[in-house]
Image 1 (tube, rainbow, N blue to C red):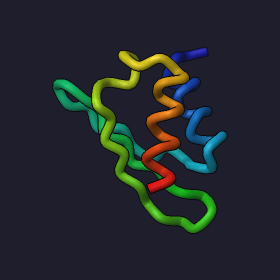
Image 2: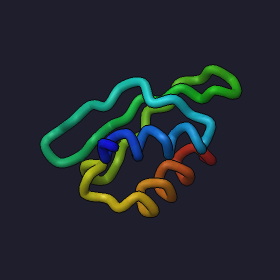
Image 3: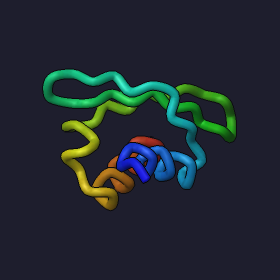
Image 4: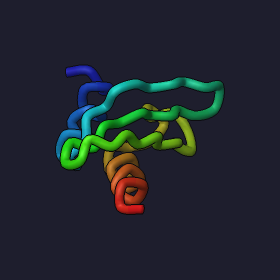
Length: 67
């Protein structure tokens, strides 16, 4: 299983669907759909996804969704 698939599953567990990933030199920005109400979120990660472990990634996404 691809590491990126694991990150997509994190979104699914949080009630989101990953739409796009914008890769910049020093960070990723992820566009996600909130399944519950259909709103779009732009989640600006502090660095690339693969530089974060799954737990750190999950906690970061969860904190951004709850705002």
